[in-house]
Image (cartoon, rainbow, N blue to C red; front, top):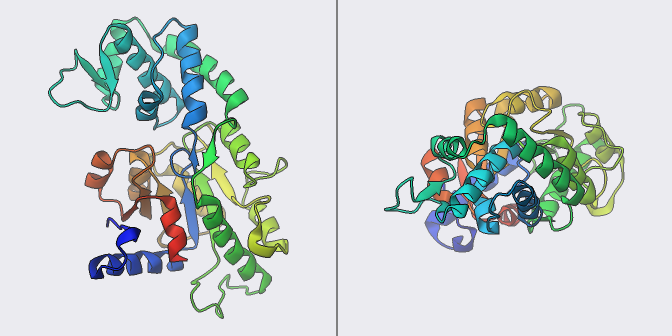
Length: 325
């Protein structure tokens, strides 16, 4: 269901918005993707990619091209970026699909077979990709919080989640439900599932106050949020109660294993959880795990790829959710 919050005065949109608002009230667990959903990390990803490409004698690529390569983890980012650089170095193009251009002229970076063919033709086997990835990862770790910024509204929406988590715990209700609130169906928990490696992911979360430097990646971390009396739930420690990353999850998205692990750790039923993301792996992970999804169409994913997958709800920006709480 595609929802345009800006058109909420129309009867059709108002009905959709009411449905989404009811879903947000009913859900207890909000599982966020990181890149393209919570944070615009392109300003740090692109320089790291180009640093590695340049070191290995590969043509550097534009920031927009790097954006088109993001998704399915760091290794796929590097594979697509290397293939793109090879194409540009040969006087060809790469990135989003271009109608009327053949594979020989233009590389669609989401076409895994085409990417593999370009890499093979240039002699880039997986061992070589490993070297580029290692160089990229080292540089990115050092610089991953220099230009990265949260999308408008995301920290405030997590505050809202945390406020309700705190309120439920503080009330001492053993059922975990805030019966007197009227509008809140139960306690709210924020979690994160990303294909990004844990070191840069954790560093980003710490910088923006969603974890503290001493935060442990376990369900008990969320209890500290509940125990602190914080006016407005200001950006402080342990707002993300549990998180799994590309090198810590039992299965990367679009597989359901990461979602299953989060549900089990936090003790939440699938019908009480929702995945909030921006790309194909987020939609498919939610579908494969049997949970609902809210997909932001102005993240790193392509709407033309996302909409045919029929996510439960689509919105333009994550800030749109703030207008519903």
